[in-house]
Image 1: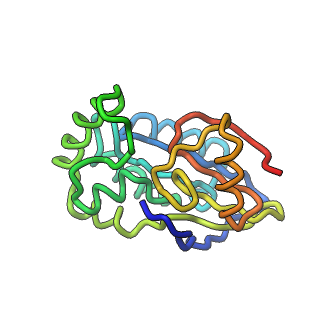
Image 2: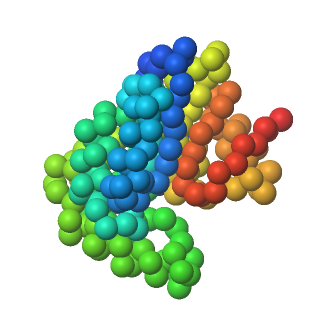
Amino acid sequence: MTGHLPPARAIDLDAGAPLLVFGGPYSNLQAVAALRRRADELGIAPANVICTGDVVAYCAEPEETTHAIRDWGCHVVAGNCEEQLAAGAADCGCGFEEGSACDLLAKGWYPFAQQRLSRENCAWMAGLPPAIAFTYAGARVRVVHGGIRVTNRFVFASEAHVLSEEFAAADADVVIAGHSGLPFVAKVA
């Protein structure tokens, strides 16, 4: 959860093929399996699939879900959960308000996940990039977990000033992020 512009891992995609971007598998093995089946049905190759992080969180199968994501071979950006689990940190680093429902839930799922994740998967998480960059349909795209400089920053459509700040720091034409969990598309002038 740094305050500087993290380096982005440059990837090559098939710009003539569909792109699938998703975030927050949250240890939900069944959802990952269903999404992968759908990607296969649509002919979306793993090289054109990107996860915006938080592979592990609230659900019951952190180790199995991590194996499924790794087996898929898709691209993954490090979310705050990956950063924290890889570091052996005491909490998920989501930045929830103390005593909030999310904070209370995290105090349950995070230790559960820590106990079940293998060292191998934690090491894999430690090697994930903080950002991914690529060109798609002529646009420079940057994929992050939360904010451009702060991994666990919540960014919402209603915060025009935050969107402007984030976009100005992105060095991209398009920014894709996941952490907030609320999908939206916004054009920033």
